Length: 194
Image 1 (cartoon, one colour):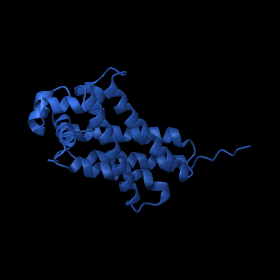
Image 2 (image 1 turned 180 degrees about the vertical axis):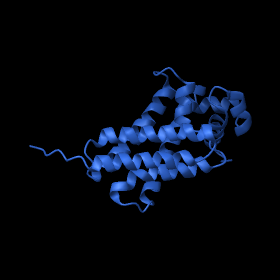
Image 3 (image 1 turned 90 degrees about the vertical axis):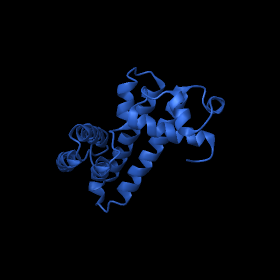
Protein backbone atom coordinates (compact mmCIF):
# COMPACT_ATOMS: atom_id res chain seq x y z
CA UNK A 1 0.00 0.00 0.00
CA UNK A 2 1.20 3.56 -0.70
CA UNK A 3 2.43 5.52 2.30
CA UNK A 4 0.41 8.71 1.79
CA UNK A 5 -2.95 8.51 3.62
CA UNK A 6 -5.02 10.00 0.79
CA UNK A 7 -3.55 7.60 -1.75
CA UNK A 8 -4.10 4.63 0.57
CA UNK A 9 -7.74 5.63 1.00
CA UNK A 10 -8.23 5.92 -2.75
CA UNK A 11 -6.53 2.60 -3.52
CA UNK A 12 -8.50 0.72 -0.87
CA UNK A 13 -11.80 2.35 -1.77
CA UNK A 14 -11.40 1.72 -5.50
CA UNK A 15 -10.71 -1.97 -4.93
CA UNK A 16 -13.52 -2.41 -2.41
CA UNK A 17 -16.11 -0.45 -4.41
CA UNK A 18 -15.34 -2.46 -7.53
CA UNK A 19 -15.27 -5.84 -5.78
CA UNK A 20 -18.23 -5.36 -3.43
CA UNK A 21 -20.17 -2.28 -4.48
CA UNK A 22 -20.31 1.30 -3.29
CA UNK A 23 -23.24 0.87 -0.93
CA UNK A 24 -21.93 -2.37 0.57
CA UNK A 25 -18.67 -0.75 1.69
CA UNK A 26 -18.78 1.69 4.57
CA UNK A 27 -16.23 4.20 5.76
CA UNK A 28 -15.17 1.92 8.63
CA UNK A 29 -14.25 -0.82 6.19
CA UNK A 30 -12.25 1.61 4.05
CA UNK A 31 -10.42 2.87 7.14
CA UNK A 32 -9.64 -0.68 8.22
CA UNK A 33 -8.39 -1.75 4.77
CA UNK A 34 -6.36 1.41 4.19
CA UNK A 35 -4.89 1.69 7.69
CA UNK A 36 -5.89 5.36 7.77
CA UNK A 37 -7.51 6.93 10.83
CA UNK A 38 -10.91 8.59 10.86
CA UNK A 39 -9.51 12.11 11.42
CA UNK A 40 -7.14 11.70 8.49
CA UNK A 41 -10.00 10.46 6.30
CA UNK A 42 -12.04 13.59 7.02
CA UNK A 43 -9.03 15.84 6.39
CA UNK A 44 -8.95 14.47 2.84
CA UNK A 45 -12.65 13.86 2.13
CA UNK A 46 -15.68 15.61 3.69
CA UNK A 47 -17.61 12.34 3.38
CA UNK A 48 -17.95 9.03 1.60
CA UNK A 49 -19.65 10.57 -1.45
CA UNK A 50 -16.61 12.78 -2.04
CA UNK A 51 -14.37 9.72 -1.87
CA UNK A 52 -16.62 7.87 -4.33
CA UNK A 53 -16.46 10.78 -6.79
CA UNK A 54 -12.67 10.99 -6.54
CA UNK A 55 -12.32 7.23 -7.03
CA UNK A 56 -14.51 7.43 -10.15
CA UNK A 57 -12.53 10.36 -11.57
CA UNK A 58 -9.29 8.40 -11.10
CA UNK A 59 -10.76 5.26 -12.61
CA UNK A 60 -12.08 7.28 -15.57
CA UNK A 61 -8.67 8.79 -16.28
CA UNK A 62 -6.96 5.41 -15.96
CA UNK A 63 -9.54 3.59 -18.08
CA UNK A 64 -9.48 6.13 -20.89
CA UNK A 65 -5.67 6.16 -20.84
CA UNK A 66 -5.76 2.36 -21.10
CA UNK A 67 -8.15 2.60 -24.06
CA UNK A 68 -5.97 5.10 -25.92
CA UNK A 69 -2.93 2.92 -25.32
CA UNK A 70 -4.84 -0.19 -26.45
CA UNK A 71 -5.93 1.55 -29.65
CA UNK A 72 -2.45 2.90 -30.38
CA UNK A 73 -0.83 -0.51 -29.86
CA UNK A 74 -3.47 -2.41 -31.84
CA UNK A 75 -1.74 -2.24 -35.21
CA UNK A 76 -5.15 -1.97 -36.87
CA UNK A 77 -5.63 0.19 -39.95
CA UNK A 78 -7.14 3.61 -39.24
CA UNK A 79 -10.59 2.57 -40.48
CA UNK A 80 -10.65 -0.31 -37.97
CA UNK A 81 -9.12 1.39 -34.91
CA UNK A 82 -12.43 1.52 -32.99
CA UNK A 83 -12.45 -2.29 -33.04
CA UNK A 84 -9.51 -2.22 -30.62
CA UNK A 85 -12.10 -1.39 -27.94
CA UNK A 86 -13.53 -4.89 -28.26
CA UNK A 87 -10.10 -6.54 -28.34
CA UNK A 88 -9.23 -4.72 -25.14
CA UNK A 89 -12.54 -5.65 -23.55
CA UNK A 90 -11.85 -9.31 -24.31
CA UNK A 91 -8.64 -9.02 -22.28
CA UNK A 92 -10.49 -7.32 -19.42
CA UNK A 93 -13.25 -9.92 -19.45
CA UNK A 94 -10.69 -12.71 -19.10
CA UNK A 95 -9.17 -11.17 -15.97
CA UNK A 96 -9.89 -13.05 -12.78
CA UNK A 97 -10.96 -9.87 -10.97
CA UNK A 98 -13.45 -8.77 -13.68
CA UNK A 99 -16.64 -7.51 -12.01
CA UNK A 100 -18.20 -5.64 -14.90
CA UNK A 101 -17.90 -1.92 -15.58
CA UNK A 102 -17.33 0.25 -12.52
CA UNK A 103 -19.33 3.02 -14.19
CA UNK A 104 -22.32 0.89 -15.15
CA UNK A 105 -22.24 -0.59 -11.65
CA UNK A 106 -22.21 2.93 -10.20
CA UNK A 107 -25.19 4.04 -12.30
CA UNK A 108 -27.14 1.02 -11.08
CA UNK A 109 -26.25 1.65 -7.44
CA UNK A 110 -26.59 5.43 -7.61
CA UNK A 111 -29.69 5.45 -9.80
CA UNK A 112 -30.65 9.09 -9.18
CA UNK A 113 -29.40 10.80 -12.34
CA UNK A 114 -28.47 13.95 -10.41
CA UNK A 115 -26.31 12.17 -7.80
CA UNK A 116 -22.64 13.15 -7.97
CA UNK A 117 -21.47 9.57 -8.58
CA UNK A 118 -24.05 8.97 -11.31
CA UNK A 119 -23.00 12.18 -13.05
CA UNK A 120 -19.31 11.16 -13.04
CA UNK A 121 -20.22 7.72 -14.42
CA UNK A 122 -22.36 9.32 -17.13
CA UNK A 123 -19.56 11.73 -18.02
CA UNK A 124 -17.14 8.79 -18.37
CA UNK A 125 -19.43 7.11 -20.89
CA UNK A 126 -19.78 10.36 -22.86
CA UNK A 127 -15.99 10.83 -22.95
CA UNK A 128 -15.52 7.30 -24.28
CA UNK A 129 -18.13 8.00 -26.97
CA UNK A 130 -16.37 11.25 -27.87
CA UNK A 131 -13.06 9.41 -28.20
CA UNK A 132 -14.61 6.79 -30.48
CA UNK A 133 -16.29 9.56 -32.52
CA UNK A 134 -12.89 11.21 -32.97
CA UNK A 135 -11.38 7.96 -34.26
CA UNK A 136 -14.29 7.50 -36.65
CA UNK A 137 -14.14 11.11 -37.87
CA UNK A 138 -10.40 10.83 -38.59
CA UNK A 139 -11.08 7.67 -40.58
CA UNK A 140 -13.68 9.54 -42.64
CA UNK A 141 -16.87 7.81 -41.49
CA UNK A 142 -20.03 9.80 -42.10
CA UNK A 143 -22.30 10.31 -39.09
CA UNK A 144 -19.41 9.40 -36.82
CA UNK A 145 -21.18 10.63 -33.66
CA UNK A 146 -24.13 8.28 -34.16
CA UNK A 147 -21.81 5.42 -35.10
CA UNK A 148 -19.71 6.03 -31.95
CA UNK A 149 -22.86 5.73 -29.82
CA UNK A 150 -23.69 2.43 -31.52
CA UNK A 151 -20.20 1.07 -30.83
CA UNK A 152 -20.39 2.21 -27.20
CA UNK A 153 -23.75 0.49 -26.87
CA UNK A 154 -22.18 -2.72 -28.16
CA UNK A 155 -19.30 -2.32 -25.71
CA UNK A 156 -21.63 -1.81 -22.75
CA UNK A 157 -23.77 -4.74 -23.82
CA UNK A 158 -20.69 -6.93 -24.13
CA UNK A 159 -19.60 -5.93 -20.62
CA UNK A 160 -22.91 -6.92 -19.08
CA UNK A 161 -23.08 -10.13 -21.13
CA UNK A 162 -19.52 -11.11 -20.17
CA UNK A 163 -20.39 -10.63 -16.53
CA UNK A 164 -23.55 -12.73 -16.93
CA UNK A 165 -21.86 -15.49 -18.93
CA UNK A 166 -18.54 -15.50 -17.09
CA UNK A 167 -16.58 -15.68 -20.34
CA UNK A 168 -14.84 -13.17 -22.64
CA UNK A 169 -16.72 -14.48 -25.70
CA UNK A 170 -19.17 -11.55 -25.68
CA UNK A 171 -16.35 -9.21 -26.76
CA UNK A 172 -15.79 -11.22 -29.94
CA UNK A 173 -19.49 -11.29 -30.75
CA UNK A 174 -19.78 -7.54 -30.18
CA UNK A 175 -16.68 -6.99 -32.34
CA UNK A 176 -18.32 -8.91 -35.20
CA UNK A 177 -21.40 -6.71 -35.01
CA UNK A 178 -19.16 -3.62 -34.84
CA UNK A 179 -17.31 -4.77 -37.98
CA UNK A 180 -20.67 -4.97 -39.76
CA UNK A 181 -21.58 -1.46 -38.63
CA UNK A 182 -18.24 -0.10 -39.86
CA UNK A 183 -18.64 -1.85 -43.24
CA UNK A 184 -22.15 -0.45 -43.64
CA UNK A 185 -21.05 3.05 -42.62
CA UNK A 186 -18.10 2.94 -45.03
CA UNK A 187 -20.52 2.34 -47.91
CA UNK A 188 -22.49 5.51 -47.12
CA UNK A 189 -21.61 8.50 -49.28
CA UNK A 190 -19.79 11.35 -47.58
CA UNK A 191 -21.76 14.57 -47.23
CA UNK A 192 -20.18 17.32 -49.28
CA UNK A 193 -20.03 20.74 -47.61
CA UNK A 194 -21.42 23.54 -49.76
